[in-house]
Length: 135
Image (cartoon, rainbow, N blue to C red; front, side):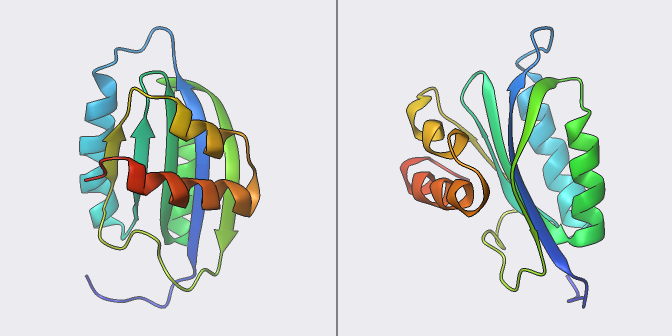
């Protein structure tokens, strides 16, 4: 993909799957995200523990902002909570992943991320990723 001079932004959020959402939608979200993100120079990771989502997205600020707004109102989840956002970042955390998708039935690793805000939440995400099978 051709390099751009766009401002790079990122956001990290958590939410819960909606009570009326089919659990199968999570794999569909990951599949769609990979295609969409690749087309828009967005990278990141989606973690799902069976009930909760944690997602980190990075890329051109205008695309990341638009995507964050769409995700925030998606009816397949509830209690969207922004944990971290930044703009003007100089290095991506996940340049190799259009959207890594991780499922983990153990809710314990996510507790580190869910209990923090800002840089601490991002640091918590980076600490738990080696414990998970991200691909």
